Length: 157
Image (cartoon, rainbow, N blue to C red; front, side):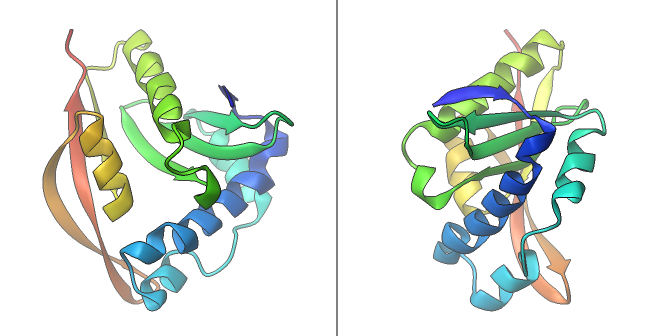
């Protein structure tokens, strides 16, 4: 598995990874109604391409055939916006490698902290990376209530 920066040709794969992760990994913690509201279908590739062009850093974990298996996004203020793995890539160290690349980048940019709004599964992951939960948040997507956790991590030292 290699960690590299996003390329425009990755956009469709990221859309599919997002959708597959929501329904495959999210199913452990959220209802079918919640999952369908969160991601009713993969978004068009141009949506993901435009996200990557807005100044955020997007890191991709690619397999031996250079096919994306997971991705993570770092916004300029230290916000981790998206972090998703194909269900078959979850739990094998791919996410940890992606996160380490993001944290290294954040430190090189001089960021003092990171923050994220994490799903149940992501909350468990980020706790292992040294984040703390600030608050559980109720959010609405397409008329359905879901929850996530606002989490932070200082980058001192």
